[in-house]
Image (tube, rainbow, N blue to C red; front, side, top):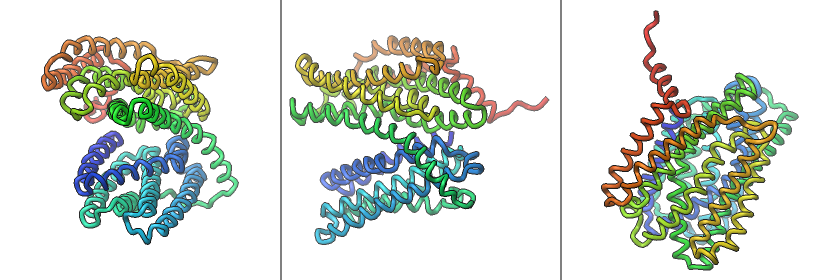
Length: 480
């Protein structure tokens, strides 16, 4: 539970820090900072994400003790890429010396350093999660956020330039790892060069298809927004972008928190009980993901009118709700792929089907862009994206759930979750037409109570049993 608590803490503090930096930098410089941060995330994904995914899959407490070449391979690959990125940052900084901190070279250097900081921190956080060291992971997140607040806010106050704030961000990430290097360190053993080459090959075969698939899913909305901007103008693309971002965050935040914990449980099941038990754990995890994400999607639909009226800027109202309704099914499919289906192939170490499904989704999305806008106008582009993500989900589901090695899902649990969500949606539907504040105040607690009561009554996806086990673990019964 410390892992989920740390994730919630990190998400909340990042939101607050973003508001502080926005106030201190001002709109124009904050816009540059936000663009550079997005670029840093892309650089980190391309360079380091395959290694972070490999750490969550192949590293564990047992591997730490018995297979040290896994950590050696990860460390050396990270070091090589980090040095390459650092050299690029220094080169950009050299080109930006004459222009000062506002030059393009300085901003590119700050972006590269921020990507380096993200990569270093995420890697070591993944190692802590893989070892099931919740206390260490929580310590990493807490220290990182404390340093980020101190360094970034102070820099934005005294040196209000995006380049300096990006450097402060990178220093805070790297300093966190340096200060906690003791508990993060593995026992010192000789490096086996032959093992290193085998390990790097394993990481590449495992991780690169996942990164390629993620790149495709990131490219899909980019193409859609560009098409929408070309056909209907940038304002319409802005409506689409805001609806997509808010909807995706509503569905993916909980899924990401679950994935941090559930996938490591499956990896541990494989280590202790074999591949068959790992597959059964992945199936149980999938039922848990459906049971917790499906009510989020239904609840988002229920409160959408109130959310639009109370939270969304007035200029976006109207198109926001239309796009959000059309995008919810596809983004829900995307969340299920990331958090329920991808782990099937990750645990099997056969990740090529993930990229095949992504290409299928991109193709269907492209066909939709050619056909649907002429019939439905700008809404057709949202339908094209939903169709593409739905096709990718169906393709990956067929690959996982059919054939001789098909995954056996607990269909009763999934059907029960769907029935409970249907009941919740029908109960909340009449409240959508109430005044926004009243609707929001009633829908959120009523939906939680109703769905929670059904989950508890029928023990959907074993969630009631998990809570009871947790309670008994904290308050054990007296020994007879």
